[in-house]
Length: 286
Image (cartoon, rainbow, N blue to C red; front, side, top):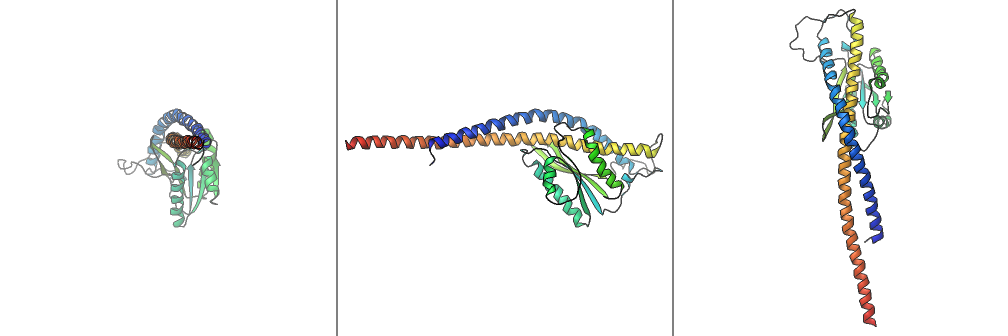
């Protein structure tokens, strides 16, 4: 059995760790509320853009934008959104597992796969696999901004225009609630039809001044809105996962302290009993 001094040292060490995890839990809780608010504001705009753009697939414009044209998938691009820091439970692991599943699925169909990585954890993980990385972005922080994402997204859009990739997917952690965050996959390009049942058979929007200029700008805004929404949703998921993970760590530290205190009391009682036995034995010898 370890000595009482060693046990006291362990208890002090665990208590110090518990203070850190409790502080991290409170910080994550505070940041999660703000991240949820940004996510709540970003979702309606992104959804409305998705609905409007989804209707364009059934329109009949004179100008057919390349983002609306489906072609044989010989190469696939995946934008993976991860965190810059760890201590967020299995959040990143689940996203990476889903990404690997999507990669194997398309590689099984004979397509090559290229990645765009947002977040330090994703970059560090996929860099080891040898998969081509067309673009990467780290240090996005707790408050993602659209202007920080534009350059990285443009690399993937240019690759699509140049036929270097024929499909573009977005993969991030979807915030369901404080206890649940799951990986979500969305096909960005080519754009898929959405809610087209009620549309007339032959129709189109009225474009002013020119369909090509309007669609170029609109579709660019659409992609940016979807990636931005994924980034803010991933931050909210990260803070929720970290809050839960740090609470679990604090609770486990409390249990460990209780167990160590029991061991300490037993060791102390054993030491006292031994001293009393030595005293009684010495007295009897006299």
